[in-house]
Length: 129
Image (cartoon, rainbow, N blue to C red; front, side, top):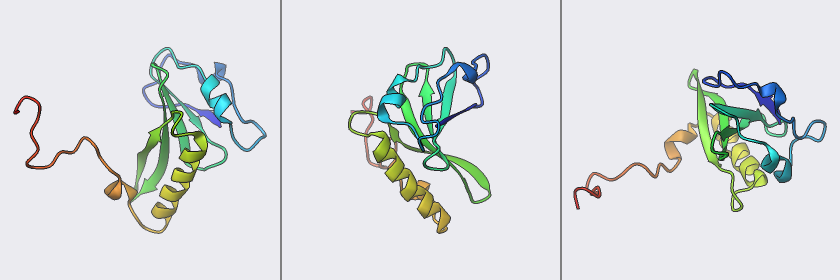
């Protein structure tokens, strides 16, 4: 993975972050765990094994996998999942390859991704209960 700057990350130098996986085709889970969170904004580390995949690391230290790909004439960021003991780097790479394949065959995977924040027309909020 190589460090890639991100918008909204002013004041944070990516040059001081480790460059995991150099020469090995990509980082390991241990290298990913060792990346320290930025002081502000978000750090993005690109994966050298799966093109278009990045790991976003927030101030809290939470790590999420992002696929950045052109869809329908515009660049889209697709959240592939959050790094955790149940969703490893290998799992993220497998999912990213599947999403990228869908995009390259003309599909828009954002249409079929589950969006847990959507609620049905008849669903009640806590206040409405």
